[in-house]
Length: 289
Ligand SMILES: [Zn+2]
Image 1: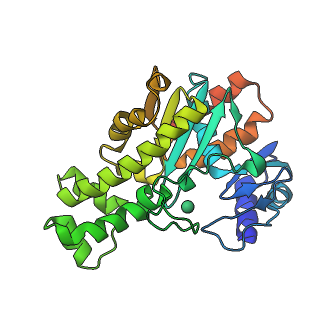
Image 2: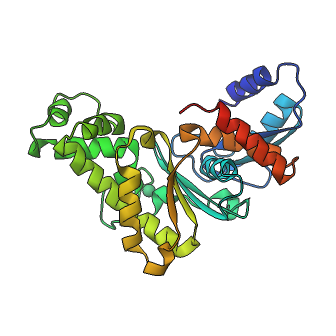
């Protein structure tokens, strides 16, 4: 995998001389750009000297951060300084997140802050890939939304229920396609995801006091009413004054926020903030949802 990364970097550079590189990765990252902790979907990845490998491949400094933190960074930069404290939650194969205050990533030890997917919302609840039970990721990630629909399908006689019973693969995409057509089973799976997400986001609001909550990731690309419902529900799980002036917004850079975040974070090491925002505006122009 590291060889593939190095090849890709080499083909991107292709004779140019970049001043810096930005790289995102699942898992934690130490100050030397080495992957640490766990990267659930990539066995054997922790311990990888990712920063050194990319720096070698492109001949410039490489800045490595957790991918959820970089997605949050992109969404902060894309707002051109309009947000002082931005909480990002990315819903995809797993659930990641990030928090940016005054343009700085809140990383914690080894960049492991805001692993919000493993915040436990229902102790004794559904098993999570991390080995614990009741993490929000077990309710609101793309695969989890699909699995919940399959598990509930015997109680419904709707197109989605029939699809689930046929043994076809059901992911969030199938659930939200059906949701938009008014499917009752899809609505039930959606409500479970929205409720679990709202509980965790409510607690995160109490802990972090953001002025923006941004929902992104692949699931959000087609996710019916998820943003609206979380915006309505999450304030019920935090003391009332915490939600005053708080805005819930969709990701401006969709599922590519992590990619743009890596590039912008690398650039931020070299650029004053107004030039960073100008670069972010160009990224936004290039991005097509
Ligand atoms: Zn977990």
